[in-house]
Length: 305
Ligand SMILES: C[S@@+](CC[C@H](N)C(=O)[O-])C[C@H]1O[C@@H](n2cnc3c(N)ncnc32)[C@H](O)[C@@H]1O
Image 1 (cartoon, rainbow, N blue to C red):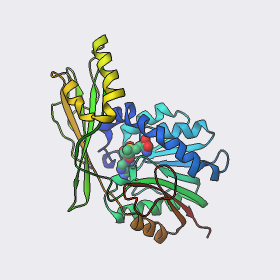
Image 2 (image 1 turned 90 degrees about the vertical axis):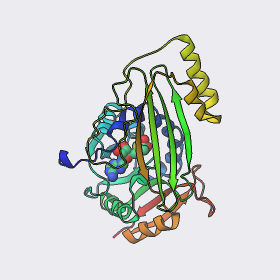
Image 3 (image 1 turned 135 degrees about the horizontal axis):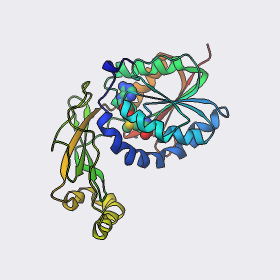
């Protein structure tokens, strides 16, 4: 991808994603891959990790003996991916426009990455690209947030650390059917402009620094506060974090747009591209019930010519 055209919107999230959400997402994901995908792949098969982010999923697959190529549009995400999965091969490409010859036994795309594709037409183009990259009988597994996944909630999750804290909140615009995540990083002595915003899907390099803390504060009281918030309060009252964050810490924010999709629309798009045996599962890996409109895993097969 020519560097001036590359997709930079996710660069400022890379440091924080690598520290936090990538690990949280991984805990739930690996059992699902073990259940829905890996038993159907050849030993040492080739896997494309589409929108691979910071590479933790790629690394887990490499440890299981697979050959993994990671693709992402953010150079900064790939920087961490190369560190986290040194045996992986990583490429800077846009999911909407990549073209690979049919060399993969499976393509995966996890942690709702494809909700960042903002229209069904573009999602279908991603499906075409994936279809072209798969060998015959190759499998495509991805998860998506569905119609009722996104809400209006000021703080949905967060973490407190001695050096920094972060929160994530979301809003949902029912009319335009578009969700927006707001990620806020609080940090002491920040060089980041307070309240600087990086607009979703911006194609320009943001003028603010990446979200990354600059200083440390590691007293025992602080460590206790962190432990109590992260282990006890967070699952019940994530917004309490705002009261615990040092008043001198400065916030910097990033916003990302996401698009929810309906199961039927996704299945139709997959079938129109040529995929067969489309199966839809819930987050436990059971067949998705008709009333599940929150999130789903899709598994589809490239049919033999
Ligand atoms: C939520 S992260 C998920 C990362 C990884 N799949 C995981 O499970 O940890 C979403 C990733 O999708 C990437 N992404 C979003 N839109 C993209 C696009 N059009 N082309 C390539 N990568 C994209 C972002 O750069 C980011 O790394």
